[in-house]
Structures are given as C-alpha cells and as structure tokens.
Image (cartoon, rainbow, N blue to C red):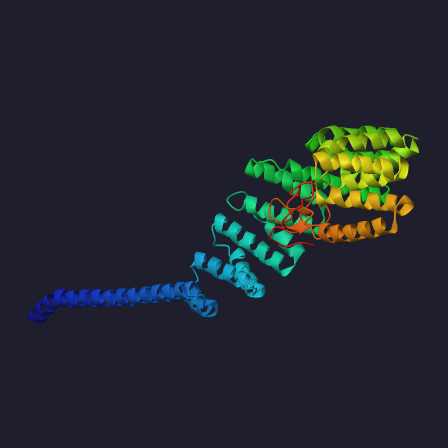
Length: 403
C-alpha cells in the first residue's frame, strides 16, 4: 500500500505539469483566435475606409455595420456610422444609432454629450424641431456645449423664436468668448417689428431700447425708432431719430427716405426734407436713394430741376442707373415741349437702359455671394446678419445664386 501511494505521489507533479501545459495551450489557442478576430476586424475596417475613399458608401456602410455588430464597444465607429447615415439622408438609421448611444448608462459624460449633440442634429435634419431642442439641451458643459448652442441658435432663427434666440446667443457669448451683439440687436429689432405690426407700442419701445443697448446707434434700431415715433404721432421726433442715420449710417437712408419725406410733409416741411436728401447724393448717388430723390424732386420742384440734379450726379457719380433716370426725366420734358422725333429717340434709349439696369445684380452678400434685388438684413442664402452692403452694385454680375 505504501509503494502504491508513493507512485501516485510521483505522478502528481507529472499530472500537474500536463494540466499546466494544456492550459497554456488553450490560452495560446484563445489568443490566436482573438488575434485572428482583431485582424479580421482591422481588415474589415480598412475595407470600409477603402470603400468610402472610392466613393462606394453603400458597401462601406454594410461593412461598418458588421464591425459595429461584432464589437458593441466601438463608440467612435458608432458615431462615424451615424454621421454617415445622416449625410446620406438616412436620418431614421442615424437617429437609431445615436439614440442607442445616448441611452447607454455606461458611457463617459463626454461621449454621452457627443451622442446627445449628434442626435439633436439628426432631429434637425429630419425636421423634428421640438425633439431636436430637447436633445441639444441635454448636452452638458464641455466640448460639445458651444456646437449644441449654435445648432439651437440656428433652429430658433428658422422658427423665428427671437426670444429664445437672444438667450442662446447670450449663452454662446459666454461659451465662446466672442461677441454676438450684432445678432442680438437684430433679434430685438425683429421682435420690435412684429410688435409694431400688432400695434403693441410698449413692446416696440422695449425692443428698440434693448437693441440700442446691444449696439448704440444701430441703424435698424434707429429706423424702427422713427417708425415707432410716427406711430406715436410724433413726426418731428421721428425725423430727429432718422437724422442720426443720415449722419452716422447714410448708406441706409434709402430704406427710410419715403417715410422721411412723409414725416416732413406732415410738418409742412417737404422742401427741407428734400434738400437734406439731395445733399446726401454727393456720397450716396449709386444707391436707391437716387431713385427716391428723383421721384420726389419731380413732384415738388418739377422735371427741369430734376434734370439739373441728375446732370450734376452724372458728373461726380456716373452710373447706368443715374443715366436711366436722366433719360426718363428728359423724356418727360420732351413730351411736354419737344418734337416727336426727340420723344421717339428718348423712348428707345430709355428702353435699352431699363433692360440693362433691371438685369444688374443689386445687392450681394459679402459672406456667400447670394444676390438679390432688394435689401435684406439677413441673407436668405447663408442666414448671416448684416452681410449685405446697403449699396447696390452695378457692373458684371458675379457668379452665385440670386433671387
């Protein structure tokens, strides 16, 4: 019995060694399988990237989806996949990917904020503005706080929710350390304009004060202030407000010139009002102000005085628009005391000039090049505020969209 026990004792180290070797062999096999799996995932990833670079997004998406299914922990891959879906217009699939990430409790705060931000952008793309707002407001302080506020600000402008836009712009100033006073002043002016249409004069006054607090002597706020004072039956005070524009922002006078003349006419001072506008033509004759002055001068002083004024303009600020107005005035004079041949010549000249001037680009956005025949405070193309120069342009039409 003792000899048998001794033999077993001798076999124990051998059996232990065999077990250790077997476990090492299994571990080695497992490592090899993991290595093969990693290599397979890497090959699949490289294949997906190669397909993307070769502009084969459909096959790339299928490849990347398979990788994401094999390894749910690939957070960055999920983000890339969701953004790829959104760029391709597959917003429902993008929402599912980012919603899955946003609802995971095991994510780091930064990744959770990233998911909420991307999900908000998905909802914006899908037109689900209320859900987009809720998702973007979930983004905490960090890397994605400022981009989320920028998306909210853009959304509020689309919705014309100017009060929320003011809050978002103010918060962005704190996050970015960059001024948004121009946008804030414009948002207050939008609120004031809407209140003026509703005849809520208390709200109009408050909005004007806030706009001027954001930017003192802001051109649009002063124009709106004059409109408010006219609504309050105070044309003399309206003229005082608008005269600040004539002194500080004369290029914007064409936006209020007709109302300027109406206020002066109400005070029986039309001649004085016309004289002030005429003085501005020395520097502003290339804009719409010339059209308005020509109209009122013909009515108040007659076509002969208008012709003299236009000849003077052609000497210091020649343009096709001024030449067209001169031909128009001379046609009026010829129709009253000229020959039939003179009238026919002027009609033909005026027709050609009008064909040319109506095809000119009037206002061009300095940010995106969008062209328009009327002046906009906010560019319809890129949504930037005060990107249009108040001076209309003539000459070669620049490339780009127009309306």
